[in-house]
Image: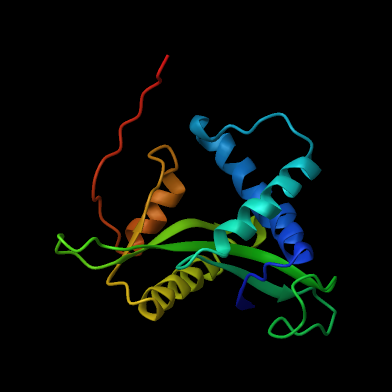
Length: 179
C-alpha cells in the first residue's frame, strides 16, 4: 500500500471522487444527520467534486493524498502506476490545508485535516494510522506546529480514533438556522 499525492488531472479526480469521496460522504451521512446528501445520481456528485477538488488543491497549502494498492493477482506498482490504472485500487484519502497564524497571535501555524477516510475492507489494518503519519509529515513540510481537525460528535468511531492519535478538544462549535 502506497500513500501518494492526489493528481489533479480529470481522470484521477473522477476516480478519487467515485471510489473514495462519495463513499466517505455516504457513510458519514448515515451516521451524522448534518451530512445528508442531496438526491443526485452518482455521476453528478463525481463531476461536481472534480472541479471543486481541483480548485481546492491548487490553492497554496492544500494537499490531497490517496492510499493506493495493487488489486490481488496483478503486477501494477502502487508507487508508480497512474492512479487511474485499472489494476490499482484506491483505499483511503486524506485532505489537508494550512491554517496560518496571523501576526498578533502567539500560536503556530496549524495543518488542518479536512477529511480522512479508509475504505471498509481496509479498516483495522493500520492504514488510518499511516494516513495520520502522512498528515504529520505534511505538517512538518509546511512548517506547521500543530494538527487540527473537526469531528462530528455523533461520529463515535472517528472520535475514538482521533483520541488514540493524541487529539484533545480545542473549542466547541455551535450552529443554528437563520430561519
